[in-house]
Length: 117
Ligand SMILES: [Zn+2]
Image 1: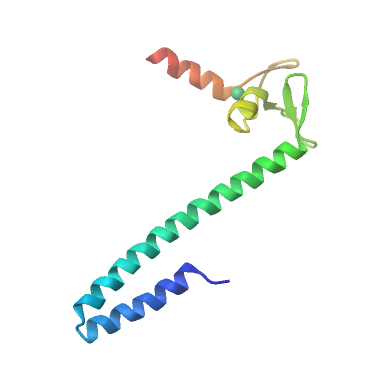
Image 2: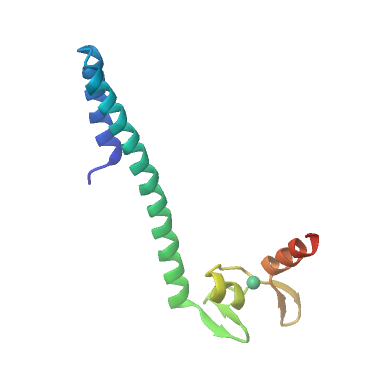
């Protein structure tokens, strides 16, 4: 697999040659190329994170079961908030407040934020 860091190493080698032969136009163009590679690296990192999140969401969507107003995963005794998943694709474990009763910690936080305005 071709990596951006391999490309960056090659461009850095060209940059050294451009400086050594004192070709300022080439030095400037190589610096531009180094900047573009850094932008590509940042974009690549972001896309990898988005792909990981999408795979995680897909796993949850395929495995979770909606029951009694919450999503459940096999082997997990604590359910996930239905609203947070359906509105934002945010997997939030609910907090148990009593027998069979749960509250969403994310939504408590939001209400507190809302009150403080
Ligand atoms: Zn929630």
